[in-house]
Length: 101
Image 1 (cartoon, rainbow, N blue to C red):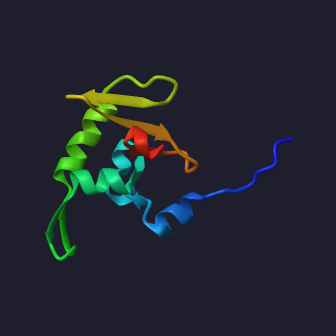
Image 2 (cartoon, helix red, strand yellow):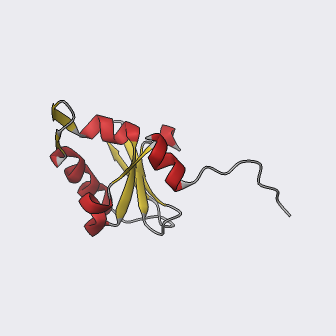
């Protein structure tokens, strides 16, 4: 029997800002979470955090989901950078950089 020493839940990660809830934005793609690093890379702040342009994030998420998954993982590589879209504890997907894993 494995003893869990520490568990960090999805709810805690969203509350801490490590993950961003994208359910309303990308549920049509099955992506309900992105890491803060992915969010910061692809979302443009249009003014004091009140208005954000998510077009770039949506485009990259669509590209990732367009590839054939391997064991449920979508691995996307473009010009040297990589993105993973992997199953999460919610039964949906999380979009992240490999170093976020």
